[in-house]
Amino acid sequence: MATIKMAYGRASLTLLIPDKNILNEIGCASSDPTTSGERVLSEALKSFDTDLVSNRRVTVLCDDYTRPTPRAEIFKALFPKLSTARAVDLVISTGTHAAKTPGNDDIIETAEKAAKSAGLRAIESFVHDVNGSGFIHAGQTSQGTQVRYNRVLDRAEIFIVISDMKPHYFAGYSNPIKHFLPGCCDFSAVENNHSMALDPKSSFGRHPLHPDPERQNNPLALDQLEAMGLIVGDRSVYAVHLITNEGQIMDAMFGEIFNTLPEMFRRVDGYFGETVEPADIAIVTPGGFPDDESLYTSQRALELTAAGVKTDGRVLFFSACENGIGTAKAKQNFYDRLVLPLADVLKTIEEEYVLYAHKAYKFALMIQKLKTLAIKSEIAPEILAAAHLTPIENPQQILNTWLAEKPDATINIFHHANKLAIYEKAKS
Image 1 (cartoon, rainbow, N blue to C red):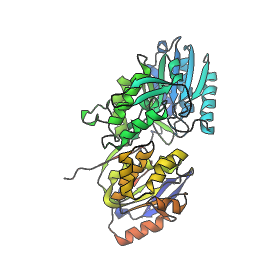
Image 2: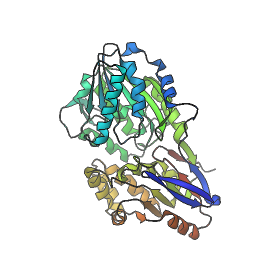
Image 3: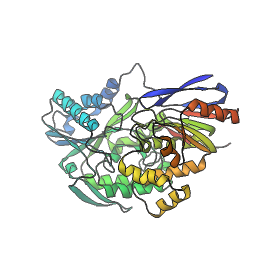
Image 4: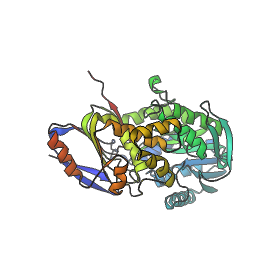
């Protein structure tokens, strides 16, 4: 009998599972305990030539508080390299997330302390607000996105993006390009871009800059790439690329993004990509807080592991959701869509896409495929049941029931599933 701990919110829950039923237990690769994140960063930043930023205004882009990026460690390593810059702007690229939050305030405080310690001449901090004003129109992409971006980006002479990379279920990968669109664009630009998530080719493991030509077709990621080009013009974009797990830095690289992204995509595939045989049951955790802070956020873990469960199979999902469904707009266009009959969910979104609806669309497709999608959550059971989910109080009890019905059922277990990329093994 295997004792399996599943991350849940800010704690964990335990399952007892017969060894004979377990097909795979997969999580993210662990960091080397003999190598510190500080050393990994130091090695990556050896290629940083301070002449790159000398007497220039540098804009550093970083993600917001909803991402568990080890920012203090990164600021400490990066900011001394910027000491010759004329000025430094820090922009938190929130996309459509809330701008004014205690978490984002903490990021600014951390950055300003690190800047002072590094002896930077000046640093100004900005939080992108999708509901703000002062957007500049950069033009239109080939796929029709009108690119309007935060005017603070026009202050930059060179960009450095702090990018915690992982598979992304429709943009291919979380990567530096996403810090421009959706990171610093207006609502309409993000909405048009994300409408392309309904295209099956807009999926994880695919990106126009992927080194494998067979994996370069991703319409949504291409739109983001074109948008970045319109925003930055002839200015250079560099990145501190990171691969992390549980806040630990496992790998890093610094360089101009077009020169480094193909290699970083290859590395992400190596750390997080797995090919498996689909099982009768998949047990999935996004990885605890903040990756299961809301149902809107945690749903990506199901998308990234969907290939690990058979059609008409069952999923046991651990997602505490301490922030409930998500923001008010996410609830309106994600949850409120999902309570419709599943056929209507798909039909209405195909007829008219609105931002956040891609989540409902993909969720509906998955629910249709499964016999049961059971969820352990702090969200009220009636709210979950209305969205075609099966709320459960006791995960062990439901698993025991499933195994009693089919004693030889196979099980795939996925930890930190918000970072995994699960592919189905080809049938022999």
